[in-house]
Length: 379
Image (cartoon, rainbow, N blue to C red; front, side, top):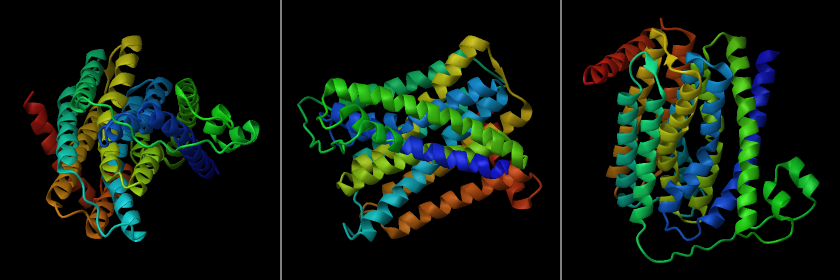
C-alpha cells in the first residue's frame, strides 16, 4: 500500500510542478522577450525549468541531513541531465516529424558546439570538484561560480541591439479560486488582465512557491518509496525524482519546437543540464555545509557517485557527437537511438539498485569505477 501511495504522490507532484512551471514559463517569456533565440532557451528557460532540480536537491540535503541526502541530490541532478539530454531531444524530434511539421530538425552548429562543450566542461568540473571523502562549502561555491561564468558569457555573446520576440502567452481568464484548484497560476495572478512587468514578477514568485512545495513532497515520496521496496534513495532519485523534475524541461522544449524555435528547444535542454550540474547541486551543497559543516561520505557513496558522474560524462559526449555529426538534420533514427540509450541507463540504474551481483551490471560498474579512479589520480 505504501508503494502505491508514494507513487501516487510522485505523480501528483509531477502535475503540480508541470502546472507551476507553466506560470513560470509565461513570466520568464515576458521578462526575456528581448533576448535572442538560443540565448533565452539556455538561460531564462533553462533556469525556470530546472528549479525543480534545485529545490529537490535542497530538500534531499536539508531533510535527510546526511550523505544519503547528498547522494539523492546528485542522483536527481545527474539523472535529470541524462533525461534532458536524451528524452527531450527525442520527444521534440518525433513530435515535429510525426506532426509533419518537418521531415527533420536542423540545429545551429553554433548552439550545439557552444552549449555542448560548456556542458562537457561542467561535467568534467563536477568530477574533479566532487572528490574525496569530505565535501565543504568551497566545493559548492566553485560549481556556482562556473555557472555564473557561463551565464555571463551567454549574456555578453548576445551582442548589441534590441531583440523583440513575439509574445503570445495570455491567461485563460475566469474564476481565480477555480484556477488555483486547477493549478492555473497565470489566471490566479492575471485574471482577465494582460501581463506586465510587475505581474510577471508576482507570477514568478508564486510559481516558485508551488514548485518548492511540490519538490518537498517529491522528496518525501521518494524516501517512502525507497524504504518500501528496500532500495537506497540514491537509485530512486536517479530514476523517479529526476524524471519528475524534468517534466517542465520537456514541456518548454516541446512548445519551443512547435513554434519552430528548434535552437531554443535544444538549448533549453543543454542549458538546463549546465544549471543542474553547477547551480542546482552547487547552491544546496554550499548552503548545507556552511550551516552544518562538511559532508562525510561513505566508501559506498563515493563509488556510486563517482560511477554516476563518469556515466553522465560518457552519455553526454555520445549525445554531443550525435548532434555534431547530424549536419543534415536530426531525424527519427537519431531520436530512437537517444531513447534506447536512456532506456539502457534506466535498466542499469534499477539493476544496480537491486543488486551488485548481476554480471553485466557488475562489469559496467567496475569499468566506470576504473575511469573514476583514473580521474581521481589526476588530482
